[in-house]
Length: 492
Image (cartoon, rainbow, N blue to C red; front, side, top):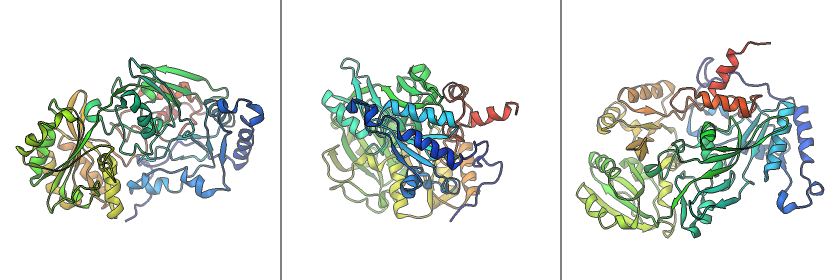
């Protein structure tokens, strides 16, 4: 069921956007960029990288692809984003090429939206004012790894699974990964993501210590290349690329663990929730705890060798360290669980268990069931009363998918429930009831950084945009604090 376009004044209404550039301006920019770092200008081609790759109106399908992500998870975002398209896409493979694009856009006042692999779900990389989309997947080097601290410096376009492979010989691993790690870039994850596999141990990306520094290109006629420390980097963390172009990141890593994949069945939902909640507070070394209500488990794909869920069976999915296996089976059995399958991560065939967690759960469900969307929330403690109240009100239109996380140092359960789409009003009613029950909503049906989070404007994010993107050209329309700042400024 399609949603009508958002009304004026709605949180989804596009306001305060710069004008869409004249095609002649885009043609001028493309001509300027076509000569940047051409082979005759860059004798050391290995160091300079390949020339800039331009995708224009003559390649409409590719231009459309580079202007999209997975915003169609939200029926509310579809009418806002589906017609949006860049006028020019640019693929860069060096920092100097990024600076050239930033300089050209600044001089000609062309909006600029940066993208990685486009695996986001909120339209983070969808251009709302035309202009240029800059893809950074060509910036894909692991620049350094400190053997003593494990700190890495990595370019923004490196695919996270590839980065993991490069870290493995050194006995290191990333702290946090999305379920899309096989395709997502590290820069896109930091700019547009928030958490994922590993959040049980390490919390969320914006928690202090998870980002140690950034290399940033400013959008100015003469772009600066800045190296920011952890404190100065924080306003650019999960800012949708609205306040600086991230070209490289300094990140901590953790010791690599030979994770074991476990699938545990429960007949009782209450026992399954209690076990997931209790497990998150144990001293066992775990990387992920995912709980799927029976209807979701019944329709989920499973790794090769893992039996399908029995009728009415809820499933708990774990990534556990080898030293936890002495205790776990008996501990789970005492709480109503039964071990259904176990295999080392990376050695089982077919789908890895981590791709049944986080938004891959939503992906698999939507592949089979039309007319469903999802929500994101942090559950109150204890969780059972909130879950029961919402289930009583919404019945089979709300199916539970829980993830264990660490929030401000405490073990908590987050929820990414699947929701049968019945319109904007029922969605608003569900969110209101969840808030009344004590849940914190992270709305995946919103455009701006703030409305998708806690709703508050972050003054540091706005100040960073003023410093690094003074013309307001980066990903316009996605930072509400900047839009409000513009409204408050006197008009010429």
